[in-house]
Image 1 (cartoon, one colour):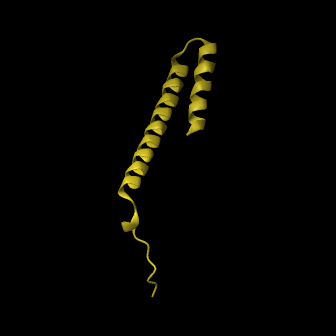
Image 2: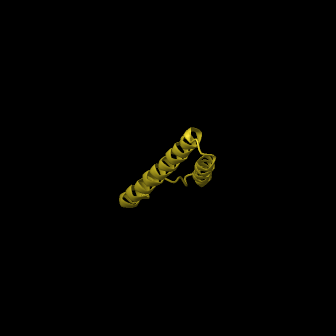
Image 3: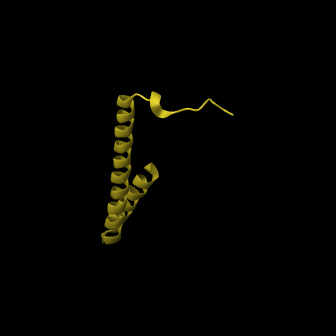
Length: 67
């Protein structure tokens, strides 16, 4: 029988809260980046200028590669 079990009772609540806040912030940044990629993808589809289409597609691709 293994009596060496690890529990979360030793985790500092302040560190845990900071970690959770960091995770929340990262999740928000990911969501914003994905929203930006969608925005630029939509803009590329609606732009009439080939130069703007290329620019917006490049910007959308750049955002997608970051996440």
